[in-house]
Length: 411
Image 1 (tube, helix red, strand yellow):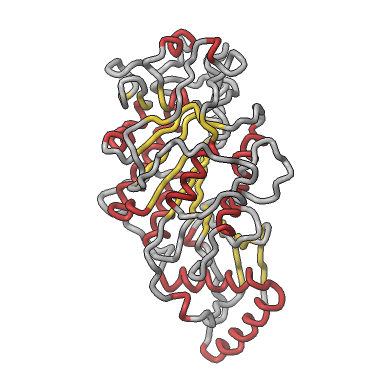
Image 2 (image 1 turned 90 degrees about the vertical axis):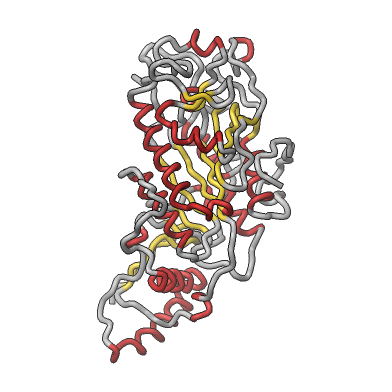
Protein backbone atom coordinates (compact mmCIF):
# COMPACT_ATOMS: atom_id res chain seq x y z
CA UNK A 1 0.00 0.00 0.00
CA UNK A 2 1.33 3.40 -1.01
CA UNK A 3 0.68 5.97 1.73
CA UNK A 4 2.19 9.45 1.58
CA UNK A 5 1.03 12.36 3.60
CA UNK A 6 2.63 15.78 3.29
CA UNK A 7 2.19 18.10 6.27
CA UNK A 8 3.33 21.67 6.84
CA UNK A 9 3.15 23.30 10.28
CA UNK A 10 0.25 21.15 11.33
CA UNK A 11 -1.73 21.90 8.18
CA UNK A 12 -2.48 19.32 5.55
CA UNK A 13 -1.22 20.30 2.09
CA UNK A 14 -1.99 17.17 0.05
CA UNK A 15 -2.92 13.54 0.55
CA UNK A 16 -2.18 10.74 -1.89
CA UNK A 17 -3.27 7.31 -0.70
CA UNK A 18 -3.71 4.07 -2.57
CA UNK A 19 -7.42 3.68 -1.83
CA UNK A 20 -10.54 5.79 -1.75
CA UNK A 21 -12.25 5.47 1.67
CA UNK A 22 -15.95 5.99 2.28
CA UNK A 23 -16.06 6.13 6.07
CA UNK A 24 -16.36 9.88 6.49
CA UNK A 25 -19.48 10.78 8.45
CA UNK A 26 -22.46 12.15 6.60
CA UNK A 27 -22.73 15.07 9.02
CA UNK A 28 -19.90 16.84 7.20
CA UNK A 29 -21.97 16.79 4.04
CA UNK A 30 -24.91 18.60 5.59
CA UNK A 31 -25.95 21.93 4.12
CA UNK A 32 -23.74 24.76 5.32
CA UNK A 33 -25.06 27.99 6.70
CA UNK A 34 -24.46 31.09 4.61
CA UNK A 35 -21.09 32.47 5.63
CA UNK A 36 -18.81 35.37 4.84
CA UNK A 37 -15.62 34.85 2.85
CA UNK A 38 -12.36 36.79 2.79
CA UNK A 39 -10.13 36.36 -0.27
CA UNK A 40 -6.55 37.60 0.20
CA UNK A 41 -4.26 38.20 -2.78
CA UNK A 42 -0.53 38.79 -2.47
CA UNK A 43 1.32 40.60 -5.28
CA UNK A 44 4.79 39.25 -4.53
CA UNK A 45 7.75 41.34 -5.60
CA UNK A 46 6.53 44.84 -4.64
CA UNK A 47 4.13 46.21 -7.25
CA UNK A 48 4.55 49.86 -8.20
CA UNK A 49 1.48 51.34 -6.53
CA UNK A 50 2.17 54.73 -8.12
CA UNK A 51 1.60 53.23 -11.56
CA UNK A 52 -1.24 50.98 -10.42
CA UNK A 53 -3.20 53.76 -8.68
CA UNK A 54 -1.86 56.90 -10.33
CA UNK A 55 -1.77 60.26 -8.46
CA UNK A 56 -2.11 62.15 -11.72
CA UNK A 57 -3.14 65.29 -9.83
CA UNK A 58 0.30 65.43 -8.16
CA UNK A 59 2.77 67.53 -10.16
CA UNK A 60 5.79 65.76 -8.68
CA UNK A 61 4.59 62.46 -10.15
CA UNK A 62 5.47 63.59 -13.68
CA UNK A 63 8.61 65.44 -12.63
CA UNK A 64 10.07 62.25 -11.19
CA UNK A 65 8.89 59.82 -13.89
CA UNK A 66 9.57 61.34 -17.30
CA UNK A 67 9.50 58.02 -19.21
CA UNK A 68 7.44 55.63 -17.06
CA UNK A 69 4.76 57.94 -15.69
CA UNK A 70 1.19 57.00 -16.63
CA UNK A 71 -0.31 59.90 -18.64
CA UNK A 72 -3.29 61.81 -17.33
CA UNK A 73 -6.83 60.68 -18.18
CA UNK A 74 -7.79 61.54 -21.74
CA UNK A 75 -4.27 61.19 -23.10
CA UNK A 76 -3.15 58.21 -25.17
CA UNK A 77 -2.40 55.37 -22.76
CA UNK A 78 -3.65 57.55 -19.92
CA UNK A 79 -5.01 56.55 -16.54
CA UNK A 80 -8.74 55.99 -16.06
CA UNK A 81 -10.05 58.67 -13.74
CA UNK A 82 -11.32 57.66 -10.31
CA UNK A 83 -11.92 60.82 -8.30
CA UNK A 84 -10.33 63.79 -10.02
CA UNK A 85 -6.93 63.25 -8.41
CA UNK A 86 -6.27 59.50 -8.62
CA UNK A 87 -6.64 57.30 -11.67
CA UNK A 88 -6.22 53.59 -12.26
CA UNK A 89 -3.77 52.11 -14.77
CA UNK A 90 -5.41 51.86 -18.22
CA UNK A 91 -4.90 48.08 -18.33
CA UNK A 92 -7.00 47.85 -15.15
CA UNK A 93 -9.98 49.71 -16.59
CA UNK A 94 -12.50 46.92 -15.75
CA UNK A 95 -11.89 47.69 -12.08
CA UNK A 96 -12.70 51.36 -12.60
CA UNK A 97 -16.31 50.33 -13.23
CA UNK A 98 -16.40 48.57 -9.84
CA UNK A 99 -14.95 51.68 -8.20
CA UNK A 100 -17.64 53.90 -9.69
CA UNK A 101 -20.33 51.40 -8.61
CA UNK A 102 -19.00 51.78 -5.06
CA UNK A 103 -17.87 48.14 -4.92
CA UNK A 104 -14.12 48.81 -4.96
CA UNK A 105 -12.16 50.87 -2.43
CA UNK A 106 -8.48 51.77 -2.43
CA UNK A 107 -6.14 52.55 0.45
CA UNK A 108 -3.12 54.51 -0.77
CA UNK A 109 0.09 55.31 1.10
CA UNK A 110 -0.50 52.10 3.04
CA UNK A 111 2.18 49.75 4.31
CA UNK A 112 4.44 48.59 7.10
CA UNK A 113 5.99 50.76 9.79
CA UNK A 114 9.16 48.68 9.44
CA UNK A 115 11.74 50.34 7.15
CA UNK A 116 13.09 47.19 5.47
CA UNK A 117 13.47 47.06 1.71
CA UNK A 118 14.16 43.31 1.76
CA UNK A 119 11.51 41.34 -0.14
CA UNK A 120 11.89 38.38 2.20
CA UNK A 121 11.60 40.34 5.44
CA UNK A 122 8.80 42.61 4.24
CA UNK A 123 6.70 39.69 3.00
CA UNK A 124 7.32 37.84 6.25
CA UNK A 125 6.24 40.85 8.33
CA UNK A 126 3.08 41.43 6.30
CA UNK A 127 2.06 37.76 6.42
CA UNK A 128 2.93 37.29 10.08
CA UNK A 129 1.18 40.55 10.93
CA UNK A 130 4.02 41.55 13.25
CA UNK A 131 6.26 44.09 11.45
CA UNK A 132 9.84 44.09 12.72
CA UNK A 133 9.43 40.86 14.70
CA UNK A 134 11.16 37.89 13.10
CA UNK A 135 10.40 35.42 15.87
CA UNK A 136 6.65 35.11 15.11
CA UNK A 137 5.88 31.49 14.35
CA UNK A 138 2.42 31.73 12.79
CA UNK A 139 0.56 33.91 10.29
CA UNK A 140 -2.16 36.47 10.96
CA UNK A 141 -4.81 34.49 9.09
CA UNK A 142 -4.00 31.36 11.05
CA UNK A 143 -4.34 33.32 14.29
CA UNK A 144 -7.71 34.57 13.10
CA UNK A 145 -8.84 30.95 12.65
CA UNK A 146 -7.99 30.34 16.31
CA UNK A 147 -9.57 33.59 17.49
CA UNK A 148 -12.90 32.67 15.95
CA UNK A 149 -13.22 28.92 16.25
CA UNK A 150 -16.71 27.49 15.75
CA UNK A 151 -18.37 24.12 15.68
CA UNK A 152 -19.37 24.05 12.03
CA UNK A 153 -15.86 24.70 10.67
CA UNK A 154 -14.96 22.31 7.85
CA UNK A 155 -11.61 21.13 6.44
CA UNK A 156 -12.14 23.73 3.71
CA UNK A 157 -12.39 26.65 6.10
CA UNK A 158 -9.03 28.05 4.95
CA UNK A 159 -7.61 27.23 1.51
CA UNK A 160 -4.60 28.56 -0.39
CA UNK A 161 -4.59 28.07 -4.16
CA UNK A 162 -0.84 27.59 -4.21
CA UNK A 163 1.84 24.91 -4.19
CA UNK A 164 2.75 25.60 -0.57
CA UNK A 165 0.90 26.97 2.40
CA UNK A 166 1.61 30.72 2.55
CA UNK A 167 3.17 32.29 5.63
CA UNK A 168 -0.12 33.99 6.53
CA UNK A 169 -1.89 30.62 6.92
CA UNK A 170 0.89 28.72 8.64
CA UNK A 171 0.29 27.74 12.24
CA UNK A 172 -1.55 25.17 14.32
CA UNK A 173 -5.04 25.81 12.92
CA UNK A 174 -5.85 23.49 9.98
CA UNK A 175 -5.48 24.97 6.49
CA UNK A 176 -5.12 23.48 3.02
CA UNK A 177 -2.79 24.27 0.14
CA UNK A 178 -4.30 23.07 -3.14
CA UNK A 179 -2.51 23.89 -6.37
CA UNK A 180 -5.30 22.38 -8.52
CA UNK A 181 -8.66 21.39 -7.05
CA UNK A 182 -9.12 18.76 -9.74
CA UNK A 183 -5.97 16.95 -8.60
CA UNK A 184 -6.56 17.22 -4.86
CA UNK A 185 -7.50 14.11 -2.99
CA UNK A 186 -7.07 10.44 -2.55
CA UNK A 187 -6.06 8.94 -5.82
CA UNK A 188 -7.93 5.78 -6.62
CA UNK A 189 -6.54 2.29 -6.60
CA UNK A 190 -8.30 -1.00 -5.95
CA UNK A 191 -11.91 -0.24 -5.06
CA UNK A 192 -13.87 -3.48 -5.34
CA UNK A 193 -16.86 -3.95 -3.07
CA UNK A 194 -15.15 -6.93 -1.45
CA UNK A 195 -12.23 -4.79 -0.25
CA UNK A 196 -13.96 -1.56 0.73
CA UNK A 197 -15.06 -2.43 4.26
CA UNK A 198 -11.65 -3.66 5.33
CA UNK A 199 -9.81 -0.68 3.93
CA UNK A 200 -12.22 1.82 5.49
CA UNK A 201 -11.59 0.53 8.99
CA UNK A 202 -7.86 0.17 8.33
CA UNK A 203 -7.43 3.74 7.12
CA UNK A 204 -9.68 5.12 9.83
CA UNK A 205 -7.34 3.58 12.39
CA UNK A 206 -4.30 4.90 10.52
CA UNK A 207 -5.69 8.41 10.54
CA UNK A 208 -6.32 8.27 14.29
CA UNK A 209 -3.01 6.67 15.27
CA UNK A 210 -0.52 8.33 12.92
CA UNK A 211 -2.02 11.61 11.88
CA UNK A 212 -4.55 12.57 14.51
CA UNK A 213 -6.92 15.39 13.60
CA UNK A 214 -4.95 16.27 10.46
CA UNK A 215 -5.38 12.80 9.03
CA UNK A 216 -9.08 12.79 9.74
CA UNK A 217 -9.40 16.22 8.15
CA UNK A 218 -7.65 14.89 5.06
CA UNK A 219 -10.22 12.16 4.56
CA UNK A 220 -13.06 14.56 5.36
CA UNK A 221 -11.82 17.09 2.82
CA UNK A 222 -11.46 14.53 0.04
CA UNK A 223 -14.90 13.05 0.68
CA UNK A 224 -16.54 16.48 0.79
CA UNK A 225 -14.91 17.54 -2.47
CA UNK A 226 -15.86 14.31 -4.18
CA UNK A 227 -19.50 14.55 -3.13
CA UNK A 228 -19.68 18.21 -4.14
CA UNK A 229 -18.19 17.25 -7.54
CA UNK A 230 -15.57 19.98 -7.28
CA UNK A 231 -12.68 19.74 -9.72
CA UNK A 232 -14.68 18.68 -12.74
CA UNK A 233 -15.70 20.87 -15.67
CA UNK A 234 -16.70 24.34 -14.49
CA UNK A 235 -18.55 27.02 -16.40
CA UNK A 236 -18.26 30.52 -14.91
CA UNK A 237 -21.53 32.41 -14.51
CA UNK A 238 -22.65 35.71 -16.03
CA UNK A 239 -20.34 35.42 -19.03
CA UNK A 240 -17.22 35.80 -16.87
CA UNK A 241 -13.99 35.09 -18.75
CA UNK A 242 -10.94 34.37 -16.61
CA UNK A 243 -7.51 35.01 -18.13
CA UNK A 244 -5.61 31.88 -19.10
CA UNK A 245 -2.93 32.31 -16.49
CA UNK A 246 -1.97 30.92 -13.13
CA UNK A 247 -3.73 33.78 -11.39
CA UNK A 248 -6.84 33.44 -13.53
CA UNK A 249 -7.00 29.72 -12.75
CA UNK A 250 -6.60 30.39 -9.02
CA UNK A 251 -9.43 32.93 -8.95
CA UNK A 252 -11.69 30.61 -10.93
CA UNK A 253 -11.03 27.78 -8.50
CA UNK A 254 -11.73 30.01 -5.50
CA UNK A 255 -15.08 30.92 -7.07
CA UNK A 256 -15.81 27.23 -7.59
CA UNK A 257 -14.96 26.39 -3.99
CA UNK A 258 -17.19 29.17 -2.65
CA UNK A 259 -20.11 28.11 -4.83
CA UNK A 260 -19.67 24.45 -3.85
CA UNK A 261 -20.69 25.30 -0.28
CA UNK A 262 -17.76 23.49 1.34
CA UNK A 263 -17.46 25.94 4.22
CA UNK A 264 -14.74 28.19 2.77
CA UNK A 265 -14.11 31.29 4.90
CA UNK A 266 -10.56 32.36 4.03
CA UNK A 267 -8.94 31.94 0.61
CA UNK A 268 -5.48 32.91 -0.61
CA UNK A 269 -3.97 33.44 -4.04
CA UNK A 270 -0.74 35.05 -5.22
CA UNK A 271 1.08 36.22 -8.31
CA UNK A 272 4.62 37.43 -8.83
CA UNK A 273 6.59 39.35 -11.43
CA UNK A 274 6.28 42.80 -9.85
CA UNK A 275 9.96 43.57 -9.18
CA UNK A 276 10.38 45.98 -12.09
CA UNK A 277 13.89 47.39 -11.76
CA UNK A 278 14.46 47.52 -15.53
CA UNK A 279 12.21 48.65 -18.41
CA UNK A 280 9.06 48.87 -16.31
CA UNK A 281 7.02 50.56 -19.03
CA UNK A 282 4.03 52.83 -18.60
CA UNK A 283 0.64 52.31 -20.31
CA UNK A 284 2.22 49.35 -22.10
CA UNK A 285 5.15 47.10 -21.32
CA UNK A 286 6.22 44.71 -18.59
CA UNK A 287 4.20 46.14 -15.72
CA UNK A 288 1.14 46.79 -17.87
CA UNK A 289 1.03 43.13 -18.92
CA UNK A 290 1.04 41.96 -15.32
CA UNK A 291 -1.59 44.50 -14.28
CA UNK A 292 -3.87 43.44 -17.14
CA UNK A 293 -3.76 39.80 -16.02
CA UNK A 294 -4.35 40.90 -12.43
CA UNK A 295 -7.34 43.10 -13.27
CA UNK A 296 -8.93 40.57 -15.61
CA UNK A 297 -8.71 37.87 -12.94
CA UNK A 298 -10.34 40.11 -10.34
CA UNK A 299 -13.10 41.40 -12.60
CA UNK A 300 -13.91 37.89 -13.88
CA UNK A 301 -14.16 36.64 -10.30
CA UNK A 302 -16.52 39.48 -9.43
CA UNK A 303 -18.75 38.79 -12.41
CA UNK A 304 -18.70 35.03 -11.84
CA UNK A 305 -19.74 35.34 -8.20
CA UNK A 306 -22.71 37.57 -9.01
CA UNK A 307 -25.05 38.10 -6.05
CA UNK A 308 -22.79 35.97 -3.85
CA UNK A 309 -20.36 38.92 -3.71
CA UNK A 310 -22.70 40.30 -1.04
CA UNK A 311 -20.84 38.01 1.38
CA UNK A 312 -17.35 38.20 -0.13
CA UNK A 313 -14.52 40.69 0.36
CA UNK A 314 -11.31 40.57 -1.70
CA UNK A 315 -8.19 42.38 -0.47
CA UNK A 316 -4.94 42.82 -2.42
CA UNK A 317 -1.51 43.55 -0.94
CA UNK A 318 2.19 43.75 -1.74
CA UNK A 319 5.16 43.85 0.63
CA UNK A 320 6.15 47.45 -0.19
CA UNK A 321 5.99 49.94 -3.04
CA UNK A 322 8.59 51.40 -5.39
CA UNK A 323 10.75 54.51 -5.20
CA UNK A 324 9.13 57.74 -6.42
CA UNK A 325 11.88 58.52 -8.95
CA UNK A 326 12.41 56.24 -11.91
CA UNK A 327 15.93 54.85 -12.06
CA UNK A 328 18.51 54.94 -14.87
CA UNK A 329 17.15 51.70 -16.34
CA UNK A 330 13.65 53.12 -16.78
CA UNK A 331 12.46 51.05 -13.87
CA UNK A 332 11.87 51.58 -10.17
CA UNK A 333 13.77 50.45 -7.10
CA UNK A 334 12.43 49.22 -3.77
CA UNK A 335 10.32 51.76 -1.92
CA UNK A 336 8.05 52.03 1.09
CA UNK A 337 4.28 52.75 0.99
CA UNK A 338 1.94 51.17 -1.56
CA UNK A 339 -1.72 50.83 -2.54
CA UNK A 340 -4.16 48.15 -1.41
CA UNK A 341 -7.50 47.37 -3.05
CA UNK A 342 -10.61 46.07 -1.31
CA UNK A 343 -13.64 44.95 -3.28
CA UNK A 344 -16.96 43.27 -2.56
CA UNK A 345 -20.56 43.83 -1.60
CA UNK A 346 -19.76 44.85 2.01
CA UNK A 347 -17.25 47.50 0.85
CA UNK A 348 -17.80 51.26 0.98
CA UNK A 349 -16.31 51.72 -2.44
CA UNK A 350 -15.86 54.66 -4.74
CA UNK A 351 -13.23 56.23 -2.50
CA UNK A 352 -9.45 56.33 -2.11
CA UNK A 353 -8.87 56.03 1.63
CA UNK A 354 -5.92 57.15 3.71
CA UNK A 355 -4.06 60.43 4.07
CA UNK A 356 -2.10 61.34 0.94
CA UNK A 357 1.39 62.51 2.02
CA UNK A 358 2.44 64.02 -1.29
CA UNK A 359 5.44 63.34 -3.51
CA UNK A 360 7.49 66.51 -3.03
CA UNK A 361 11.01 65.56 -1.83
CA UNK A 362 10.47 66.90 1.68
CA UNK A 363 7.24 64.89 1.98
CA UNK A 364 8.80 61.56 1.06
CA UNK A 365 10.06 58.84 3.35
CA UNK A 366 13.85 59.23 3.54
CA UNK A 367 13.53 61.77 0.71
CA UNK A 368 12.90 59.00 -1.84
CA UNK A 369 9.73 56.96 -1.19
CA UNK A 370 6.01 57.42 -0.75
CA UNK A 371 5.51 57.70 3.02
CA UNK A 372 3.29 55.29 4.95
CA UNK A 373 0.28 57.05 6.49
CA UNK A 374 -1.88 53.93 7.07
CA UNK A 375 -0.56 50.80 8.76
CA UNK A 376 -1.59 47.71 6.78
CA UNK A 377 -2.82 46.18 10.04
CA UNK A 378 -5.53 48.84 10.23
CA UNK A 379 -6.94 47.39 7.00
CA UNK A 380 -6.59 43.79 8.19
CA UNK A 381 -8.17 44.63 11.54
CA UNK A 382 -11.27 46.06 9.91
CA UNK A 383 -11.57 43.01 7.67
CA UNK A 384 -11.44 40.45 10.48
CA UNK A 385 -13.71 42.40 12.86
CA UNK A 386 -16.35 43.95 10.60
CA UNK A 387 -16.44 41.28 7.91
CA UNK A 388 -15.41 38.05 9.62
CA UNK A 389 -16.88 39.02 13.00
CA UNK A 390 -13.82 38.45 15.16
CA UNK A 391 -14.59 39.88 18.60
CA UNK A 392 -11.03 40.87 19.42
CA UNK A 393 -7.74 41.22 17.55
CA UNK A 394 -5.48 41.12 20.60
CA UNK A 395 -4.14 37.69 19.63
CA UNK A 396 -4.36 38.24 15.87
CA UNK A 397 -2.19 41.37 15.87
CA UNK A 398 -0.37 41.26 19.21
CA UNK A 399 0.74 44.63 20.51
CA UNK A 400 -1.10 46.59 17.83
CA UNK A 401 -3.94 49.02 18.51
CA UNK A 402 -5.88 50.00 15.44
CA UNK A 403 -6.87 53.61 14.88
CA UNK A 404 -10.26 52.37 13.65
CA UNK A 405 -10.50 55.43 11.43
CA UNK A 406 -10.79 53.93 7.93
CA UNK A 407 -14.43 52.83 7.62
CA UNK A 408 -13.81 50.78 4.47
CA UNK A 409 -16.65 48.36 5.23
CA UNK A 410 -20.32 49.03 5.72
CA UNK A 411 -21.63 48.84 9.26
